[in-house]
Image (cartoon, rainbow, N blue to C red; front, side):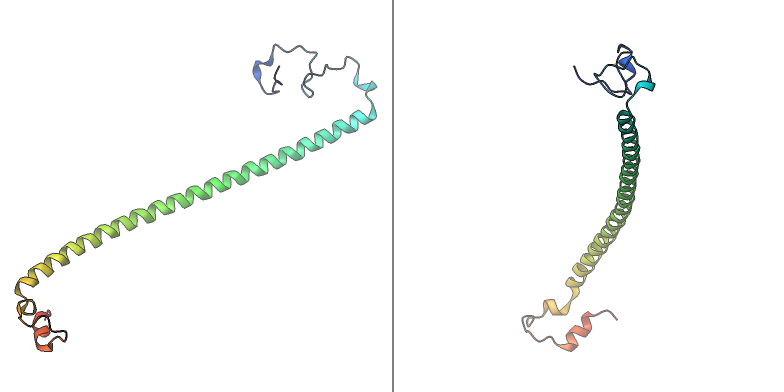
Length: 134
């Protein structure tokens, strides 16, 4: 039989003989006055340990929540940066298309491309000057 959980509302079937603190151990029918001092010290230690554990669990959950919040902020920041970079890529792509068209139009009228000496490694300054925008 699995150990029942104390917070489970479906445990109404458990007999009152079963303790909430100690599973599978019958509750003492004697009064608390007859309880041994070691048992009280044990209970006090358990209470302190549970309190300490509860505080540690709260701290851990808070730390986990802060980490999740930080990751979410970082995610949003990266999404914004990604959107901005995509916009920049679009602008640069449009500029590249425009400059490619300008180059094609220029190639039609460029005297350097039509020159029979276009394989010369040293360009002529006068020919280059005629191709450059004024």
